[in-house]
Length: 245
Image (cartoon, rainbow, N blue to C red):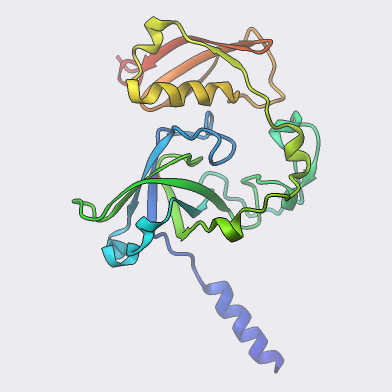
Protein backbone atom coordinates (compact mmCIF):
# COMPACT_ATOMS: atom_id res chain seq x y z
CA UNK A 1 0.00 0.00 0.00
CA UNK A 2 1.38 3.41 -0.95
CA UNK A 3 2.53 5.69 1.86
CA UNK A 4 0.25 8.43 0.57
CA UNK A 5 -2.75 6.09 0.86
CA UNK A 6 -1.83 5.13 4.42
CA UNK A 7 -1.46 8.79 5.38
CA UNK A 8 -4.78 9.70 3.83
CA UNK A 9 -6.52 6.87 5.70
CA UNK A 10 -4.83 7.91 8.94
CA UNK A 11 -6.00 11.50 8.49
CA UNK A 12 -9.53 10.30 7.76
CA UNK A 13 -9.59 8.17 10.90
CA UNK A 14 -8.26 11.03 13.02
CA UNK A 15 -11.02 13.28 11.73
CA UNK A 16 -13.73 10.80 12.70
CA UNK A 17 -15.78 12.00 15.64
CA UNK A 18 -17.63 9.87 18.14
CA UNK A 19 -21.34 10.55 18.08
CA UNK A 20 -23.32 10.89 21.28
CA UNK A 21 -26.38 8.68 20.83
CA UNK A 22 -27.88 9.21 24.28
CA UNK A 23 -27.33 10.56 27.78
CA UNK A 24 -27.78 8.67 31.04
CA UNK A 25 -29.51 10.37 33.96
CA UNK A 26 -28.51 9.25 37.44
CA UNK A 27 -28.61 10.36 41.08
CA UNK A 28 -25.03 11.72 40.98
CA UNK A 29 -24.39 15.32 39.87
CA UNK A 30 -20.67 15.02 40.73
CA UNK A 31 -17.95 12.35 40.72
CA UNK A 32 -17.58 12.00 44.48
CA UNK A 33 -19.81 9.24 45.76
CA UNK A 34 -20.06 7.35 42.47
CA UNK A 35 -19.68 3.57 42.63
CA UNK A 36 -16.16 2.61 41.57
CA UNK A 37 -17.42 0.00 39.12
CA UNK A 38 -20.67 -0.84 37.40
CA UNK A 39 -22.75 -3.45 39.21
CA UNK A 40 -21.31 -2.79 42.66
CA UNK A 41 -24.54 -1.10 43.74
CA UNK A 42 -27.20 -3.01 41.88
CA UNK A 43 -30.11 -1.11 43.41
CA UNK A 44 -29.11 2.18 41.76
CA UNK A 45 -31.37 2.97 38.82
CA UNK A 46 -30.80 5.32 35.90
CA UNK A 47 -32.53 6.32 32.70
CA UNK A 48 -31.06 6.38 29.19
CA UNK A 49 -32.64 8.99 26.93
CA UNK A 50 -31.64 9.11 23.29
CA UNK A 51 -30.70 12.14 21.28
CA UNK A 52 -33.47 13.23 18.87
CA UNK A 53 -31.59 11.78 15.88
CA UNK A 54 -31.68 8.30 17.45
CA UNK A 55 -35.19 8.23 18.92
CA UNK A 56 -36.37 5.55 16.56
CA UNK A 57 -37.94 2.53 18.30
CA UNK A 58 -36.71 0.32 15.47
CA UNK A 59 -33.14 0.85 16.73
CA UNK A 60 -34.09 -1.04 19.90
CA UNK A 61 -36.01 -3.83 18.22
CA UNK A 62 -35.03 -7.10 19.93
CA UNK A 63 -33.23 -5.45 22.85
CA UNK A 64 -36.00 -6.46 25.26
CA UNK A 65 -34.85 -10.06 24.83
CA UNK A 66 -31.63 -9.30 26.73
CA UNK A 67 -31.18 -8.87 30.46
CA UNK A 68 -28.00 -6.72 30.34
CA UNK A 69 -26.29 -4.27 28.03
CA UNK A 70 -22.86 -2.76 27.60
CA UNK A 71 -22.69 1.03 27.73
CA UNK A 72 -19.83 2.72 25.90
CA UNK A 73 -19.60 6.18 27.42
CA UNK A 74 -17.42 9.24 27.85
CA UNK A 75 -15.45 10.26 30.93
CA UNK A 76 -16.78 13.77 30.35
CA UNK A 77 -15.22 15.22 33.51
CA UNK A 78 -11.77 13.71 33.00
CA UNK A 79 -10.73 14.80 29.52
CA UNK A 80 -7.01 15.51 29.22
CA UNK A 81 -4.58 16.11 26.35
CA UNK A 82 -1.58 14.88 28.33
CA UNK A 83 -0.74 11.18 28.27
CA UNK A 84 -0.12 9.71 31.71
CA UNK A 85 1.46 6.24 31.45
CA UNK A 86 0.88 5.52 35.15
CA UNK A 87 -1.90 6.34 37.59
CA UNK A 88 -2.48 5.89 41.31
CA UNK A 89 -5.53 3.64 41.88
CA UNK A 90 -7.49 4.94 44.89
CA UNK A 91 -8.12 1.41 46.18
CA UNK A 92 -4.36 0.90 46.53
CA UNK A 93 -4.08 3.89 48.85
CA UNK A 94 -3.30 6.52 46.24
CA UNK A 95 0.48 6.02 46.48
CA UNK A 96 1.10 2.91 44.36
CA UNK A 97 1.57 3.53 40.65
CA UNK A 98 0.12 1.19 38.04
CA UNK A 99 0.09 1.35 34.26
CA UNK A 100 -2.94 3.21 32.93
CA UNK A 101 -3.82 0.24 30.71
CA UNK A 102 -3.86 -2.03 33.77
CA UNK A 103 -6.52 0.14 35.43
CA UNK A 104 -9.93 1.63 34.76
CA UNK A 105 -8.75 5.13 35.58
CA UNK A 106 -10.71 7.90 33.82
CA UNK A 107 -7.46 9.63 32.83
CA UNK A 108 -6.80 7.87 29.54
CA UNK A 109 -5.56 8.74 26.05
CA UNK A 110 -9.21 8.55 24.97
CA UNK A 111 -11.82 9.28 27.67
CA UNK A 112 -13.87 6.15 26.94
CA UNK A 113 -15.48 3.88 29.51
CA UNK A 114 -17.32 0.56 29.37
CA UNK A 115 -19.99 -0.57 31.83
CA UNK A 116 -22.27 -3.60 31.97
CA UNK A 117 -25.69 -2.72 33.41
CA UNK A 118 -28.98 -4.54 33.89
CA UNK A 119 -32.06 -3.63 31.88
CA UNK A 120 -34.97 -3.01 34.25
CA UNK A 121 -37.45 -1.97 31.57
CA UNK A 122 -37.70 -0.43 28.11
CA UNK A 123 -40.40 2.10 27.28
CA UNK A 124 -40.63 2.38 23.53
CA UNK A 125 -43.13 5.24 23.32
CA UNK A 126 -42.61 8.20 25.65
CA UNK A 127 -42.60 11.97 24.97
CA UNK A 128 -38.80 11.69 24.73
CA UNK A 129 -38.79 8.62 22.54
CA UNK A 130 -37.58 5.21 23.73
CA UNK A 131 -36.25 5.22 27.30
CA UNK A 132 -34.18 2.43 28.85
CA UNK A 133 -34.20 2.15 32.64
CA UNK A 134 -31.12 0.32 33.91
CA UNK A 135 -29.63 -0.63 37.28
CA UNK A 136 -26.05 -0.79 38.46
CA UNK A 137 -24.65 2.13 36.44
CA UNK A 138 -21.53 4.00 37.61
CA UNK A 139 -22.02 7.23 35.62
CA UNK A 140 -22.57 10.86 36.54
CA UNK A 141 -25.87 12.51 35.75
CA UNK A 142 -25.97 13.57 32.09
CA UNK A 143 -23.03 11.41 30.96
CA UNK A 144 -22.83 11.06 27.16
CA UNK A 145 -23.40 7.54 25.81
CA UNK A 146 -21.53 6.65 22.61
CA UNK A 147 -23.02 3.21 22.02
CA UNK A 148 -25.16 0.44 23.48
CA UNK A 149 -24.46 -3.24 22.83
CA UNK A 150 -26.16 -6.37 24.18
CA UNK A 151 -24.31 -8.32 26.85
CA UNK A 152 -23.75 -11.94 25.80
CA UNK A 153 -23.04 -14.24 28.74
CA UNK A 154 -21.59 -17.03 26.61
CA UNK A 155 -18.78 -14.79 25.36
CA UNK A 156 -18.62 -11.82 27.74
CA UNK A 157 -18.40 -13.80 30.99
CA UNK A 158 -15.10 -15.63 31.54
CA UNK A 159 -15.35 -17.67 34.73
CA UNK A 160 -11.63 -18.30 35.24
CA UNK A 161 -10.37 -14.82 34.28
CA UNK A 162 -7.66 -13.37 36.55
CA UNK A 163 -8.47 -10.03 38.17
CA UNK A 164 -4.93 -8.81 38.86
CA UNK A 165 -4.35 -6.40 41.73
CA UNK A 166 -8.01 -5.32 41.63
CA UNK A 167 -9.11 -8.65 43.10
CA UNK A 168 -6.75 -8.20 46.03
CA UNK A 169 -8.82 -5.30 47.37
CA UNK A 170 -12.25 -6.79 46.70
CA UNK A 171 -14.65 -7.46 49.53
CA UNK A 172 -13.83 -4.40 51.62
CA UNK A 173 -17.03 -2.95 53.06
CA UNK A 174 -18.09 -0.74 55.94
CA UNK A 175 -20.86 -1.08 58.49
CA UNK A 176 -23.32 1.75 57.83
CA UNK A 177 -25.21 3.48 60.61
CA UNK A 178 -27.94 5.99 59.72
CA UNK A 179 -30.30 7.31 62.41
CA UNK A 180 -33.91 6.55 61.49
CA UNK A 181 -34.80 10.25 61.65
CA UNK A 182 -32.27 10.95 58.89
CA UNK A 183 -32.97 7.90 56.76
CA UNK A 184 -36.68 8.73 56.68
CA UNK A 185 -35.90 11.90 54.72
CA UNK A 186 -34.70 9.78 51.78
CA UNK A 187 -37.41 8.42 49.45
CA UNK A 188 -38.12 4.82 50.39
CA UNK A 189 -37.15 3.45 46.97
CA UNK A 190 -33.69 5.08 47.26
CA UNK A 191 -32.75 3.96 50.78
CA UNK A 192 -31.30 0.52 50.05
CA UNK A 193 -29.21 1.94 47.20
CA UNK A 194 -27.82 4.64 49.49
CA UNK A 195 -26.88 2.12 52.19
CA UNK A 196 -25.16 -0.14 49.64
CA UNK A 197 -23.34 2.86 48.21
CA UNK A 198 -22.03 3.95 51.61
CA UNK A 199 -21.01 0.41 52.58
CA UNK A 200 -18.59 0.42 49.64
CA UNK A 201 -16.80 3.43 51.20
CA UNK A 202 -17.03 6.45 48.85
CA UNK A 203 -13.81 7.98 50.25
CA UNK A 204 -10.47 7.84 48.45
CA UNK A 205 -8.46 5.10 50.17
CA UNK A 206 -5.67 7.51 51.05
CA UNK A 207 -8.04 9.54 53.26
CA UNK A 208 -8.50 8.00 56.69
CA UNK A 209 -9.23 10.87 59.05
CA UNK A 210 -11.85 9.79 61.57
CA UNK A 211 -12.57 13.43 62.44
CA UNK A 212 -13.23 14.53 58.88
CA UNK A 213 -16.81 14.95 57.68
CA UNK A 214 -17.26 13.92 54.05
CA UNK A 215 -20.18 14.84 51.86
CA UNK A 216 -21.66 14.17 48.46
CA UNK A 217 -24.97 14.73 46.69
CA UNK A 218 -27.21 11.76 46.01
CA UNK A 219 -30.67 12.04 44.44
CA UNK A 220 -31.09 15.67 45.48
CA UNK A 221 -29.77 15.25 49.03
CA UNK A 222 -26.38 16.11 50.49
CA UNK A 223 -25.17 13.14 52.53
CA UNK A 224 -22.62 13.98 55.25
CA UNK A 225 -20.77 11.19 57.03
CA UNK A 226 -17.76 10.20 59.11
CA UNK A 227 -15.80 6.95 59.18
CA UNK A 228 -14.13 5.48 62.23
CA UNK A 229 -12.48 2.06 61.97
CA UNK A 230 -14.94 0.07 59.85
CA UNK A 231 -18.07 2.01 60.78
CA UNK A 232 -19.54 4.75 58.60
CA UNK A 233 -21.97 7.03 60.42
CA UNK A 234 -24.23 9.43 58.57
CA UNK A 235 -24.24 12.72 60.49
CA UNK A 236 -26.57 14.83 58.38
CA UNK A 237 -28.85 14.61 55.35
CA UNK A 238 -29.83 17.91 53.77
CA UNK A 239 -32.25 18.34 50.90
CA UNK A 240 -30.51 20.30 48.14
CA UNK A 241 -33.25 22.93 48.00
CA UNK A 242 -32.62 23.69 51.68
CA UNK A 243 -28.93 24.38 51.09
CA UNK A 244 -29.70 27.73 49.50
CA UNK A 245 -32.30 29.03 51.92
